[in-house]
Length: 129
Image (cartoon, rainbow, N blue to C red; front, side):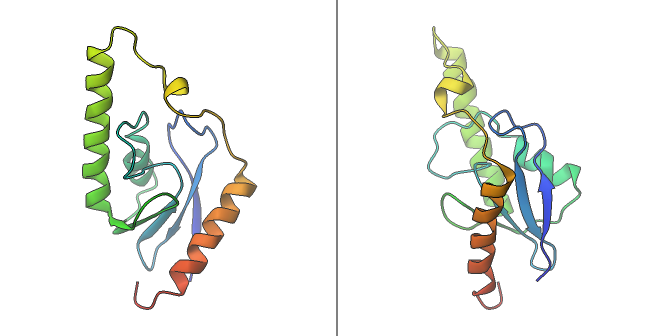
């Protein structure tokens, strides 16, 4: 299976973030671009912006956090989480900065690539994915 690594576009959580894309399977493996367990996401457009920038044809998302979803489901989830963020910022008298809302910091490409390799090893073991 051929796998390409791409840089994440405009993400204030991880300045040097990367994600993996398997063109034949149209699958993205990513960490911290989306998580179904989050109520609020501060970088909601980063994932679709990255997909559009690199002109990828994504059908499935294989996240480090959460379950596998279709790309359409991921976009709907991000819309909901981004809307929650906007409402929170508008209604709060003391808005939470992104760095206090989430643990800030970056992971090295080396540690992230180890996690992506693990996820793709799992992907390869699933027939007809």
